[in-house]
Image (tube, rainbow, N blue to C red; front, side, top):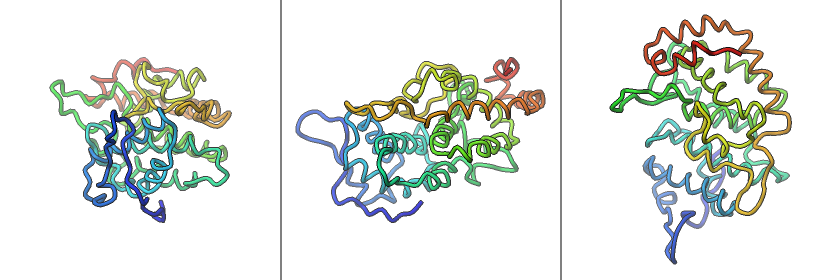
Length: 288
């Protein structure tokens, strides 16, 4: 994505504060390249949640447009969550707030080629399979030794929603086909898990990530709960997606699932101990 956007003149500040003192983020202006992942996530979360509560203000918009292309190369960094997840949340918030402008910035195709392709970066894959720990669930470094495969990883969940919003009607079938062309049991297990968890979205009962909270399996990601149709006191959209988009996506997704060799999928998924133990029941019982 182009780095033509100029650095904003003023500093960016936090969304939530009490009293007369507002926390500012001077490192964005003076030491962006060496700024920590945790700091950047705090900035993006301030933008995402701030827009939800107060609406889009020029300061947040200008800084986000400046940060977006510069943070895409750092999307594989994480502090609890992937930086990518917070970047997607902030992007969707700004995109919703500015959707009615005649001049669209950034261009949808450019978004798909950059933010939309982060999850397909070569270092995240090896021999046609995910590079475990570099994509999807990042670690099982916890007392229970659980990866989290029973829920959808935030990087995949955010990628699907960003692309579903920005892909054109003409390219939708090809995009869905590309999702199913990946012959990786970890990826396929996550697709089946996402499909089960996404039923309220696919059925039209929910239209925004803010409504994903109580679904099982979980299909949300870092701060996705702030993405809704209202920003501040303004209704910005009735749905995150263009009219007819979800219906067309569901049709294409289910058509590809019907054409898939699900028994082969299941057998290959269940051969992997971590997948078998964490998501085995869902996979064994899955059916269209």
